[in-house]
Each structure stands twice: as C-alpha cells, then as structure tokens.
Image 1: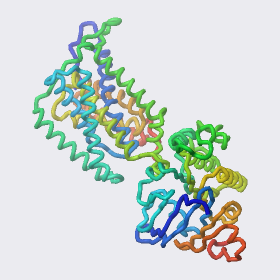
Image 2 (image 1 turned 60 degrees about the vertical axis):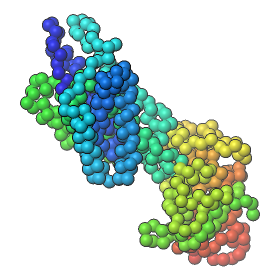
Image 3 (image 1 turned 90 degrees about the horizontal axis):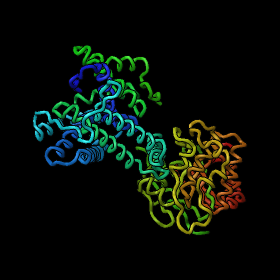
Image 4 (image 1 turned 60 degrees about the horizontal axis):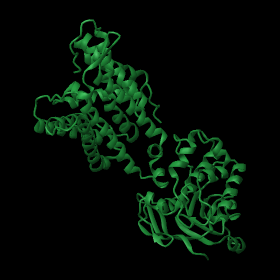
Length: 297
Length: 240
C-alpha cells in the first residue's frame, strides 16, 4: 500500500516517506472521522466503514473509467451513492437494533462480508487503478524536495473537511441539536428535535466521507478486493488512539497512524502490523478514552 | 371556565405491568394555572410523560386545543405548542447555556397574545443566564439550571407550559424566585400545569387544583373552593 514512487536522485527518501505518511493520514482521516462520529455520537460500532471506503473507490473508479466522468464529479457521485447506502443500512437495520451493541457488531460485520462478495461479483478480482485528476498530476520541486501535487491536495482536503466538520458540529444550530440528541435523546425529542432524523444525517455524512476517502485514495492505493478489511482495522486504531467522537483526535490519530504505517512498512516490513497496533495497546492501557476523548460518563 | 387548553380524559397508563394511571381525567383552562398535587409515585410525572408523548397511554385521550395528541411522537406534540420543564431539569449538560436555548427555539404561532419569546426576552427575564451564556449547562448551579430549563421551554413559544416540580432541590430563596417567574408567565396569558409535592406553594398561585392519589384523581376543584371546603387534604399529600 502507498508504494514509494521512484526515488528521484538527490531527494531524501525520508522526505518522500513523510509526505506519503501525511497523505495516508489524510485518507485515514476521511475514513475515520465518520467512524468516530457514528461511534462517538450514536454508539454504533459501524464495521461496514471499510466497505464504504471500498464502495466509494469502486463506484468512483467505474464512473471515471467506464462512464468517462470527470474526477471530481465521480468523487461526488461516489460519496452520494455511499451516503445512500449508509442511510439505507441505518434506517432499515441499525435503527431496529438501537442499544444492542452485540447485534450491531454482528449485523454490520455481516453486511461488510456481503459487500465484499458483491464487489467481487461486480468488479472482479483485479485491482482497478485510476489516474490522478489531470489538474493535480505532477508536482513541484521546492528546495530540492519533490512535492507530488495530488498528495498535497489530499492533505489540504482532509484539513478543510476537518475544519468544516468541526464548524458544523460546534458552531451551527444543527450541530447543537445533534449534541443535544446525544446528551439526552428523550429530552431532545420533548423540546421538538427530530433526533432519529438527525442520527440518520450523521450516519449518511460519515458514510459519504468514507466513500469520498475511497475514491480520493484510489489513485494512490488502487481499489481491490480486500481493501475494505485492510482499511477497517486502521479506522479502529485511529479512533482508539484519538478518542471516539473527537474530530481533533481523529485528525491527530490519522496522521500518527499514517506515519507508523508507512515507516513501519519500509523499515520493519515483517513487523508492520505489530508496530501499527502497539500504540493502540499502549493507549488502551494508559488512557482508555484515547488521546483526545472525553472520559466515559 | 375559559376554553380548554389541555385535557386528559380517561387515561390508563402502565409501566410494564404496573398500572400507574387509572382513568385519569382533568383539564386545564386557557390562561389558567392548574396545580397537580400528590405524593411521590401518585402519577404526576406520568401525566406529564403521557401528555408529551414520552409514555403512551393504553386508553384515553389527550386533547390540546381540541385535537387529540395521544400516541403521537414527542417532537410532533412539541410542535403543537406545548413545552415541558421536566423533573430534574434535564438541561443538555454538554451544551452551552446559549445552545440549550438555541436548540429549543421555535417561531411563535401567528397572532400570539404576548410578545414572542426569544434570546432577548429570555435573557431579560433571567439575567443570570445571560451572564453565563457561554458556560456549559452542566456547570451551572441547580437554581441556574432551573432557570435554563424554564427559559428553554419558553424559547419554543408554547401556549401550554408543563412544569414538573420546579422547586425540587432548590434553596428557599431560589424557590421564591421561580414562583415569581411562574406568576409572571401566568399573567402573560400562558396556560400552565404546575406539578408539585409542596401543596402550600401551589395553593398560593394556582386557579385550579387536582390531587392524584395512587394513580387516580382524588380531589379536583378550584383552589379557592378547596381552601374553603375544609377537606383534609393532608391525607393525600403526606405531611407538610
């Protein structure tokens, strides 16, 4: 994953690794922000989140390769399609399992397996690679370091989305209503807040972000069977590290995991997964609520 | 008696297998204040929950300005112009004071009688809330939280206001303040149900009284009539 491009002579491998790490962190943020919101706000451990990432990648790639849509239109389409998928899952299934974590885990895991099979059936077993959008291809050389434009763009997009999400939750009436619905769902309904509709909105938003992450990642990671279960544990690690329901936790956790994952793959490939999960174990032992999470009430 | 604002008729309600309201009937006149009294567990809060749609009655009707609202969802009932100041205040603790008011805000119905409630009017009525508007509601004192719970209910510009034990757990000075607020709201034409354990507080302010005992209406009448009737109310109310 995140393969090193040819190392230009004179450019430090470390710089490239660092850029790749932050880029991968940006993708992880798109993936895990929704996971963190859905888990932090609605207490639903959504194990279809990796599937949503992969679905976004497949749908977006098809839109680009087969339907010849421009990249950004395809990305919007992928995000919207995955949001609809998320909404259907939430409304038809998860809604009926409110409060039962075990049932939610089993159902979402089951759906994840179904999506895996479905994708294998529709898109086959070969990886699908797409080009970076032409406006963002190439790169710039500054101070002897080569910055690939697309990777920098991913980082910027992740930061902008983090800021927008924060503003939505903390600075709008809608965000306050969502938080009120988390605080005391029954009282929120009594003051007239349509809590169940808001939770569907949150779920769709998280799904859309994951789908968007999938297509944004496609030029770098490509889309292939198994991408879903490659990404899901990363989302879990990020959210455990950063703390559930905390956007800043997701952002910092994503970048930390981006670094650990990329450097681990290059420096200690045999131990990459061990190194990946080590910080999670340490955090779980020392600070179970995560680096930025609030202590459980 | 003026027009009916809210009426419960023939309400039977259960929590699981336990029958908590037996054929309960009472009504609140428009612009009047009804005191709903009774011991702990008499069914007062259940009446509130049934009215707001939080609990479903098994039988009976709840009518708000002539429309049956029994069995509807709380958010639909709230939209019809009724608001609750719940027992235990239940402010949204992780929201700021301002956000607590914001999420409950609702435009008044056209042709309302008094000036509509909004941030300005609520903050004018409760200056302490204005001072603390950026604080988290969970960090307020009990009295301030009660003010906030009342302010939050008013932000919806309700025509009927239900108040469930607003004096509970407050210092006497704060209770007096809360009661003065309720009196003001009543003077502005709001129809109010005041649930209390403290009968003395209620008789001072209510037009009508309903006393519940073991889930049934034991006594109903005007406050003045009951005061003069010489009925021994203490048997229904515990010791005060």
